[in-house]
Length: 134
Image (cartoon, rainbow, N blue to C red):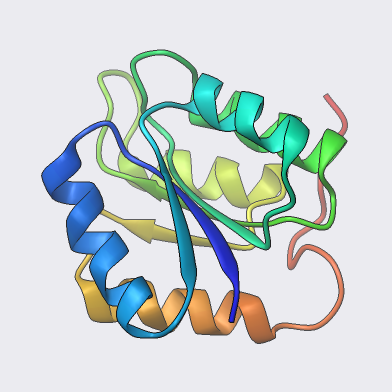
């Protein structure tokens, strides 16, 4: 099974995502922020990162670029609701353009998350979308 890093600052939301992944046999590493996830990634290998786009400590789009640049083998699922300036759909489209392998709109049901994880982990090759150089 896969090693999956889940970024979520709200523990109750994180548990809603983590428990179904654990039930499927995945190893799950929770991280409360994008910055802490990047620190953890410097020392550890991960198969998949599940990240919100809107985070208090770091922009999720910036995180996606860092992961693509420094950990290109790592798959990414980006999750977003509506932001102050952009709709959730705009943020998800941008996340895909930057290299996220899949995107989900909040609220995310556990079954949706599990389907996305299976899809991303079993897809062949690199990113599904063309990555932009920024």
